[in-house]
Length: 271
Image 1 (cartoon, one colour):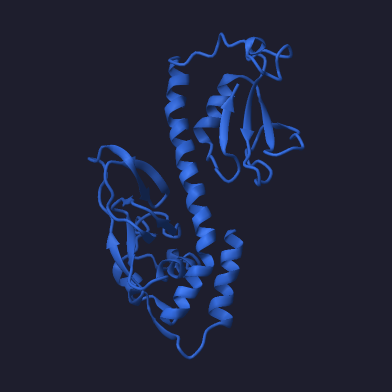
Image 2 (cartoon, rainbow, N blue to C red):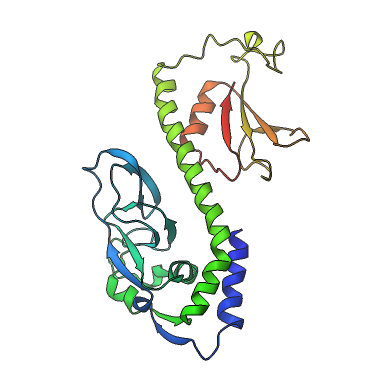
């Protein structure tokens, strides 16, 4: 889907530009604002974004709606798009669209830029509002922006659902991992042969092999879970992929470093 959006953008700026366009600056399309410190905020439902991506969820949002998030310090090229109530930390700019349809266009344009070459810092890579506001960018007509936005909206709706699913899976991982490591959740006495409706009954015990089954969405592609032996998928949908792990320790390590992707699978079941 991302490649389709990229292709649409390339066609838009290369083949659909006409006399109604003009060369302008970024501040004609969006207002750039500073993020704020999040450390004193309680946990809640609103995502917090930093230059590395999603960090945590807090009690209240800093802004809402469509926004292009541009790192102020650190990983300057990690430009993000959001369309929700959110918070950005003080090392991350967020933007307010000044025209209908501007956010997706600005995101597609700025994610192609190498902000690292515009770095204004010495020890830590840094970006300033002065640099961003003065960026030269082709400015489409208002009607062209609205048309471009309408064409990309279905894809961005799917991106948003995938991102929400990712955050839920990460939260689940962060809740379960400490409990497994501390022994609060004890799986040592789980006997697969006693579980009802279990296709592995009579074949193995958890202490010999632990399997993690990723139940893919109906239209998902091959699982992106790396590094472990993959058991062949069954032919019907939803697709199922089982991973063979050598005990609980590798499972915990995998959970700790995994970047869950809702596009790859919809539910994680440990059995």
